[in-house]
Structures are given as C-alpha cells and as structure tokens.
Length: 348
Image (tube, rainbow, N blue to C red; front, side, top):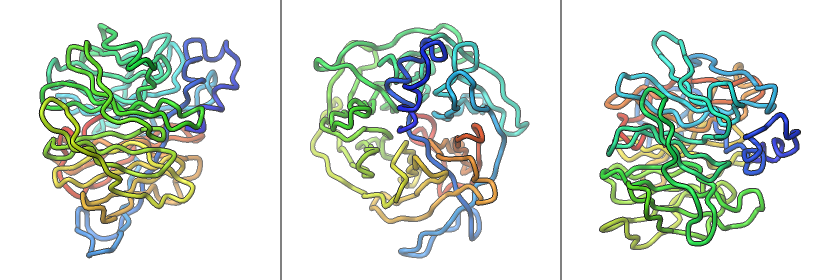
C-alpha cells in the first residue's frame, strides 16, 4: 500500500486516469513460499511448515508510465482459465488478463482509461465479472469475455466515498466489500460494506477499521473474515438473516514483522490463506487461529519480488495459483493447497 504514495509523486501525464490510483494507492502486495513434506500433508500440531511455490510464468513487466506493476484478484472462469488484474496498468495496456496455466500463455481481456482494479470475482447471480476500482471508488462489471463494461455501484455510502479493495459474494449474489477508506491518511475509517445484488442499497456492517483489505466468507457462509492492513489482524464478523451482523471479534493477530495483511482466501476445510504485503509469502491458518503453513517463493527467485497479493485455488481441486509482484515484474506462482478450492478461494 505504501507504493501508492510513490505513484502519487508521478507526473499527471504518466497517470492520466490513474491519477486516482496515485491518490489512493497500489494495494497491498503479498507473497508465496517454499515447501517441505508432501503436497497437502498436514502439519503436526503447533508446527508451521513451509510450502515452496513454483514459478508458473511471468505476466507483466514494470510499466514505464506508472513505475510499477501489481497483479491482483486471481479468479478461474468456467473454462478453467485464470483471470488476473494489473492494478497499475496504464491506458492501452491490459488491466484484465486471461491466463492458461497449463499452456503458460496469456492474453489481454480488458483495458480502459480510468480504472485501478484491485480485485475480481464472478457473480453467482448474473455470471458477470465484478471489479473493484480503488481509485474511482466504484464497482464495475464486465461480460465474461471482457466486454460490456458497466458501472454497478458508485457514490457515497453513509455520507462518505468508498475506496473498495476486495469483494466477496454471498450465495444470492449480494456483494460484501472491504472499504479501505482512510488508508492514505493513516486514519482508522475503513469499513465493511454490503451492497445488494441490484446495486441499489449499501449498508455499513463494520466501521472504524484500519485500512480494511482482504475479505472472504467462511466455508459455510455463516460469517466474514476480513483483514486490516495497518493493524496486522484478521477479524471475524458473524452474519444472520439478510446480511445482519450479530457481533465481531479479532480472531488472529498476524506476526508479519515488516509484512502486512493483504487479501484472504478460504478453502473447503475452512483454512485461511492470508496474503502478506511486503513479503512474497502467504500465511495459512486454521479457522481456530492455528498457524498451519507459510507459502513462500524460493529464495533464489525472490529477488525483486516484494509481495504476493492473493490466491485462487482450483475449484474442486487443490492446485493453487497466487499473484506475486515487485520491481522484477508480475508473476503467477503455483503450489498445492491444504484442501480443495471453493467459491471462497476463487477471486475476491
């Protein structure tokens, strides 16, 4: 997130519509790790094992206009192709890419002159691809082929604009958004916002948060996990009825050192995959807060890779793909997850 401040110093000609991105910043990057023990092998009680991620392919290089590249929001489409967004891509370069992880090829899906897209997920209601635009404070959607750009939601929520970071869908297609409001000012004014599937009604479920970042439902859709970047903590927000909140509590405090909490994914066993901004690695926890594993990029490949932002686990399978970025470029790394992928580990 601190990289956003770097973008702010770029001349306006280099950002054009990315000026908003310069102001609201490039979202937290996080990283991937190393592996000991067999794929998917459970860790002994209280033991944090290391999982080595393997490089799949490089997708992007640093953009001359913005001075960086930042991959985010990995999500599989119905054809098994992996879509990712490049937060800092300037106009004319791909802001959404489709990746064939088997053939190790990619192609551009969408670009425009304004968006700084920080996450992506397909709606279970209308099948469209939804993107959070951190700079413009909007949520937009695309047809699965990347065309037909529509603004789904924009404007203020409870009298304040949003800086939407990540998103999650419930089973009916309503959206739950991590609003990272207050990030650049260092204020604890972040929120969790629910938007109905028609894009007409927005409700604040939690506020007073420290740069809200990752967000995901648990495996049973009973509640939301969300992270706060500048407090290195993960909280749990139980839900009831039509998105009502019964309580919330701090569930996990992440000992990240210089690294900070970014996006979150949840597998079929309820394990949390917490991305780390400032380190190309990911921390894996049980739903009861036990540190199960650390996923890391091999040390010999980690130079120039500063963060791993997010992960998608193959739906119904255990192969996981995480987005990793830094001065060396934007990459996809793969590893074997601890359990199978579900909607909660596919985008957001």
